[in-house]
Image 1 (cartoon, rainbow, N blue to C red):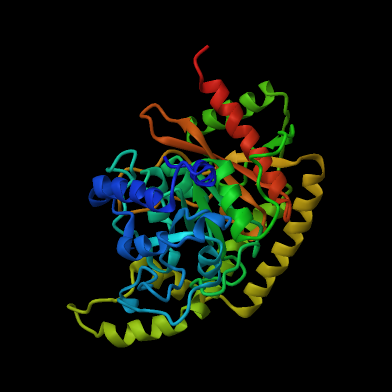
Image 2 (cartoon, rainbow, N blue to C red):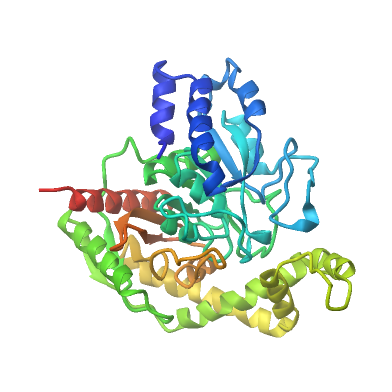
Length: 434
């Protein structure tokens, strides 16, 4: 994989130019993109023109190539949101995160595959570790592009588990910041209380570097003295259990952190969080039915009737919207109240811990491309708005990635990234031969 930090340092030292960085990415894309299918749009010629700018090397991102999940509006490339309804659609302006990426010296070379409206209907992307397996979703192309070594940084989004789960399945670092820490203006809205912009990179330090620049916050961890965190391990959760191999991976990560002198202790969730887990689905579907009202009505106009009718929106999207249309305003308001109560319970729980460890996904990526997997282990934390990081480095018996989710306090993103980097290093040391 390509390291954003390594690229930035080499540009700063004069060892590498933005133009050469871009060609390294282009060469990798030429070798494997046909089989991985991470991109829906590539504009290498346009990126090459930008790479010639003499001012790039003085900007914070140093001309690092960046890929964008295709739910972020771009004025110079189509933005299709994974939907037939938006084929060849070209917005008038960039999304805020896109504009900031350009301002701070990132070179945007393309748009990555997303499931339709960042929900569940899969796209063409395959897992670079094994092409027969899903890369996860909805940020399928972004996670796969980083894992395949096409790009050092890619944007994503999470409404359920769309950053952390594909990061786990593809064996890369994924960062879902605290709610609204990265701007979402110009990012296709599905659920206004849940949608969160995120990032993918080769390591935790890489996503921290990119987030520090794009979010204009003190988040870099590569130049800091490591802090030994207090870690709670969430082995028993009020939802279906992880696979045996994922449970073993969580145990291995906890033991590695303990061996590195972290204080590690099991933690149990208070009962209100089980109710909050259920509330996520209520909020998600209710808001999706309103956010996508125009798309739903347009799809019904185009669909027609009879046995030969073709629905221009996917089955998963239609089911989500129609489920949300059945949710009453009273049920939605109750779910919102439950989420507020759960946030208070999380704050109380986190007084004893800096972060919580849990599986990033139920297990390794599922075989086949008809599903992007299960977001069970992510939904609650998206609803809570807490920062989450997928830590890569562990695998199952077939060599497929198993990710560990590091969950922090709301607003404590740097501490969460530092703890995730600590766990990442502990896992790496554990994996090294004696």
